[in-house]
Length: 362
Image (cartoon, rainbow, N blue to C red; front, side, top):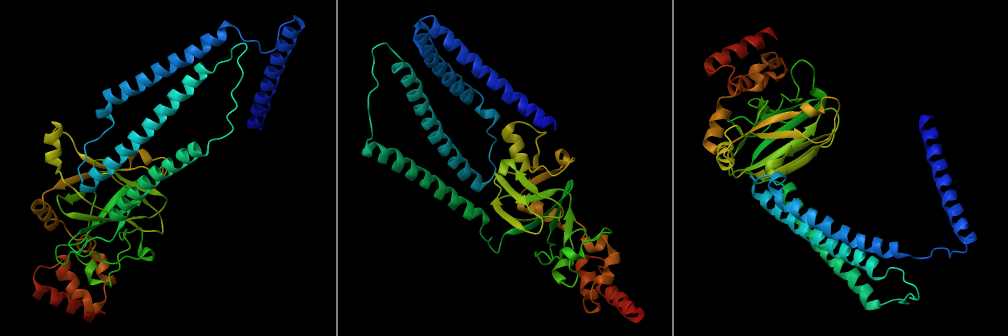
């Protein structure tokens, strides 16, 4: 109701202003003045338009050049350099077009301002000019679009067999990473129907032996100079993965897994040295408003050399070892393998004995 009242008020004000304008014109006509007569203010206003153009473009270019370092983050991925190049090429073309159009528009305002005795030139059409300003922009846009599409297809295409596969799961308001264990380097399968509130937050399918050594992390660790494939999914609402220094951005959509592959080129320490800031840390943020806690949905990202990364992986406890009660969900024929592979029992002989005990109880 309030919106309707405000809308009617705005319309009423506009109508009143229109009638005031018409009444002022009628008063001028009654005084013997010609409607729309130009005076010295016309030339002054036209000149002011040109001054506005010069000042505005000058401030625009000065600010862009002076503060470019504040909005251009250093890049730390292979594809990031390519996408940055595409961005700046697109920016250069659009800024050039914007500047040319602005100059022509404001110069025309000044050059063809109203003057007594001047008649408008009749210029019906020019087919060559129309073809030029249609075909040239079309070619430029097509080149930009298809070049960008090529980059997009590259980062979303299937990863190589040597790629490190990491799953990112989004939920209000946190990120969780799932890594393949060091035993097989393959993520186990998941099923959303298996997600529960007691521990199986990923929906791990424990009938798949590849899931036995999977582990979770609340930090995203990435190896340097090795292809990484992020498998992304959401458990509740729409989220978005954003790794600014790696030029990675991909939505996390409920019911529709997405992915993004890239290769990091600078470890966390190397970036700290480059920026001369030992407090620097990479960060993963959610860039899709997902609720009241959206602002806090962040995740620390650590990039390290491959040897350090493998040592970190080897030091992590498997999900199954942290949640031993889920051993009952493992088929009896796979319990021995599950206990050995998950590290629940380092001594295979003891593992066999425990499995036999479980079988006897069942």
